[in-house]
Length: 264
Image (cartoon, rainbow, N blue to C red; front, side, top):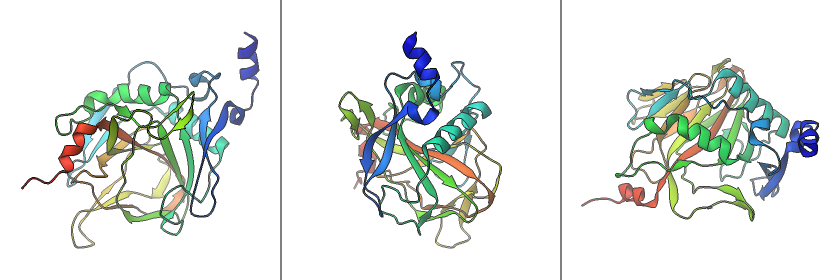
């Protein structure tokens, strides 16, 4: 009871700790946040236990692309944005691309199992099998982006990741050793902005593109990494408002990697 009272009296940022420091383009000490183990996950991430009425919507013209609508409700999205603003954003990021290329701000955290497993359970039945393999879960490392007026992300393809987790040994970038991501999983936390669609460049002509705007609480999914259908895409410039998104990944058994092996 005493610990519970102490936790209730803590400032929101004090619920978290720096689980690791990552190298960026400009600085070597970018924080990767984790929730303190003594804190109940529901304190920081009030996700409802009831299953929402999620539904799948294909993205026409984009091979392997689809949206999952209503994964999170408005209150859950706003609570997540509040956490991110409390932890703070940086122009630098632990990636090989400079700020002039991915012109937005970043906040990275490794969420507790309660968060990624709750979201995965809500939509697992809508996720595809790849090379005969069913998905194992979502990556707990959430890379969170804030796009404000004038921000953008130039054309790029998404890389793939192992399954991360914070354990008794600290942050483990490959905590399982048996899984790798195949799909990007973009959660949209806001929708009151102008511009900022995700534009997929599907042909040789600049006019050959598929523009997607995902509503608040929805998810945009598409192949990435070694998947042969990984698309070139960009984040269009924001004209007004603020776009908050979570970028994580759908993890599959290593056997699913065989889809990337050419067949002659």
